[in-house]
Length: 282
Image (cartoon, rainbow, N blue to C red):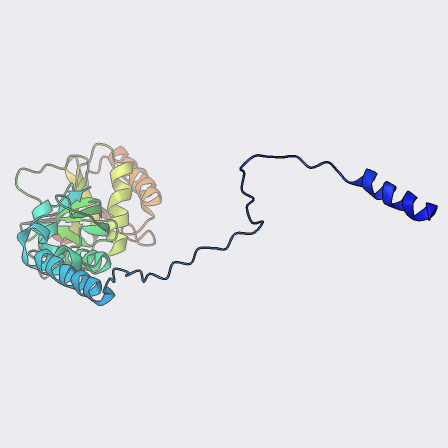
């Protein structure tokens, strides 16, 4: 009995005292989630309508771009042209009145190079108005002036005929070659002047500082007039050696009191002179 009482007393002592909290209502430990059974309506967007609207806008934009004059090529900007008029280059492009969206830069470049011998290369860029087409050209530089049958033309380093110079143009820095009637026809663009003739004339331009005009004969080649006689040096790149031979022969003749009317060094293996004009023309 004593053991039972002792256990009961121990249990009483282990109980915690209760605290009175007034009218506070105890809350459940777990709250149930409120379920909203109402139906929410979503605003629907038709992507078909949106796509159709975009397509219509694009079609209208394309019509405006291709039909209005604002996007049509009326002129071009040309850079680097010295010997050719920019209006000529625009004519070579063959894009006047074409919508800018149909202009192919490579096609325009090929058309320009093909149409003018004066243009060595061109670079074409496409942009937006007002400078829609810009063309940077690289011209073939004239190397000499050639006159044949009273027709004066400009030649490049390869002997190609570039064009006829305008009346007001003066090329004091270029050697001028005048061909005689030994040639059969006037200079033609499809018949370039032989390269050995051009190279020989350019060499003589450097070697003969005071000579601005050279002569050309189909048989005797290039020549010039010194004092009262003609000098013929043929063609090719051996002009320094031919001039040395000519000067030695000239000095020898004058030293002997002989005044020639012509000295011919066109062929260094058969150099000759003549003191009678009729004999030289045979």
